[in-house]
Amino acid sequence: MVKPLTFKGDKPKKRKHREYASTESKFGADTSTRTSARTPAEETQHLEDSAEDQSWVSADTPSDIAGPVVLVLPSDPPTCIASDANGKVFASELENLIEGDAATAEPHDVRQVWVATRVAGTESFSFKGHHGNASASAISHYESFLALPSTDIPGTFALQTGGGDKEAFVCVREASSSTKASGRVIEVRGDASSLGFETTLRIRMQARFKPRIKASKETKAREKISRKELEGIVGRRLEEDEVRRLKRARREGNFHEEVLDVRVKGKHDKFAWTGLKPFEIERDAP
Image (cartoon, rainbow, N blue to C red):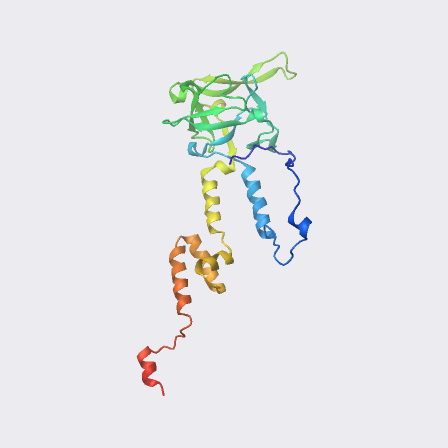
């Protein structure tokens, strides 16, 4: 299930639901069997995972680009590409960043967020705004962009228009304005004929969509297993060293082999090892 987009400073919304009479309110609480849903450690981990899911990171390679993204422009002050309800594309000033560093930028307005999707059968991407594909009603070759990693500044890209077929790039330029107090306005354009600082963009994305982070979380999820779960798999109570051994095997990828070994050990524990073979025991018995 895709989680709704949230921004810094947003207050969590309370869910509306009908109130039903609980079993406890009718019959009283059964303290002998009641347990909390999560242990304190599990609750802490849950909160950390939720915070990580909502955090924003920079795409490092084209293969990282997916899901909600912010296209950060090389302007001063830092801005990003945004689109309004009428499909007009404009440079929107960023507010959520640390000490003015564009590499830490996060959106504060849904108009600043685009959903990146790889165009089927190509290496290019489409970027869909909150109200649709800017002024286009559907995605065509002209609404796709090829992300070219910068050779000068790691973690930045140039967006080539026309899916990479056109010799033109998305860029930012300053223009004079009679309506702005500063007398200038930042324009987003798609007609730069060569690569340079003005075509250098940062692509910020939600951490949960970044492949390496996603894979790391899946690995951690596989490693998490309780003593009770391990004992259920083995079929008996486990010693501390056996629990550690199985958890280590789960991390290292040889879990099933170790489970079999522990099960075999459990079956033979009732026969104490004496260092003598069975026939030697019978021969030396009084």
